[in-house]
Image 1 (cartoon, rainbow, N blue to C red):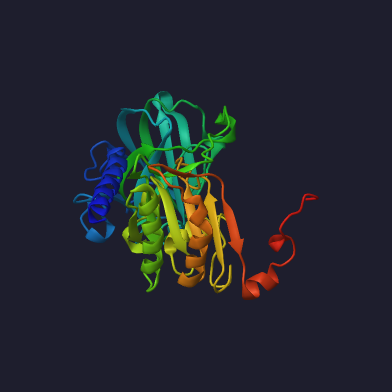
Image 2 (tube, rainbow, N blue to C red):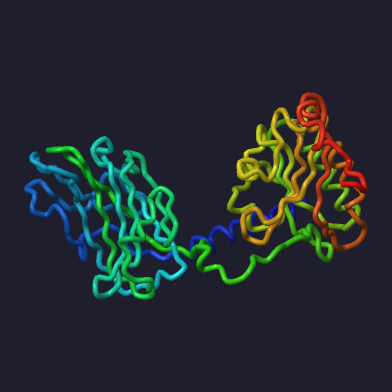
Length: 374
């Protein structure tokens, strides 16, 4: 068991390192070389400098700091903006990532980011006028066609070609007159992005209806349990059953020992409910599972395989229960699916036993065993 856990830890660290290795630094923000003020330069208090205050640095020894005071007689919005020149870089199917803050978030209400190809053709444009900046670091990730913290602004885009981006522009804006406002900027980089608009979808997504937990006597999954008392014994029971049937040791991790990003890289067996296992929060909030303090009830269970929730080709077997006792009953219900042999693969699965208020509130169609008429 210890050897298996050690191997899994090394594998998960390697996955995290590989993800970081896929990031490419576009500009480290530790110099003003290649950076120019393109808006607000005529104001007497406008400054562009390398900041050394660690509170506004996310990597390296410095960050860019753009600051100024809006005109006292401004009749509309006022902007400070900078252009960062880059060697031509291909951002096709990549996201732009950066960190940003403001020491004056009450005035610095707008943040824009635009990317340009040669000939000043705008390939990317994003904006937010709802105060996305604060004195705490904000981590931004922007992908063409999608808006999150910053909204996608297609009306500004004049080219679909992202193969040779040569300039980035960052804007900070205010609607106040005679007000100091600023932008700190650091760690501008790119990373692969799997996001695509429906216009770009050319074929149905691959489905992964069978979930492999053991192959050739080797574990292909990790089990994740709550840190609360009582869950390790339940997990040990399931791990022992799998080992007796297949010879494989399934590593058991607590919710604090694994991240959502690491879960997405392997098939998983997750025990508990959203109330005690934070690793179920993503599945619960997206409506994939329902186990909490009320559902499926004390001594009840929901055992289900969630199909590819992270879009990574990996599935989750969730033994949802409000208590370890309910999870133990769920494992009993699962027992006949754990077959003898060096391989363990389970197809689509849903086993539910409701108790108490959960059964009373969800009686009827949700607890009916469908007949041939159904």
